[in-house]
Image (tube, rainbow, N blue to C red; front, side):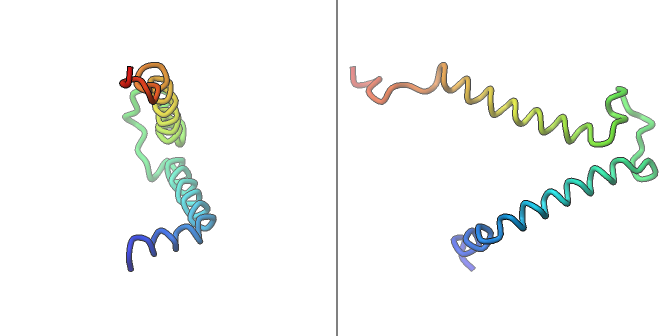
Length: 86
């Protein structure tokens, strides 16, 4: 199976994949909420006691990285097409 065939197969089933990934994420949050499975005795802050705290923190961090990178690219990195032609 070539890479193109794999991509086409995934593209045909993208709704199923999204649902599968969301289900896995939901299960991880549920597992994190069960006190017997995750030891939270050594939490450094009160926020770490909340179920799914690190998941939410990671998601917000990723979104901020994307927007800050886009802003940084717009103000300094991207130039006009004819910038070096002058």
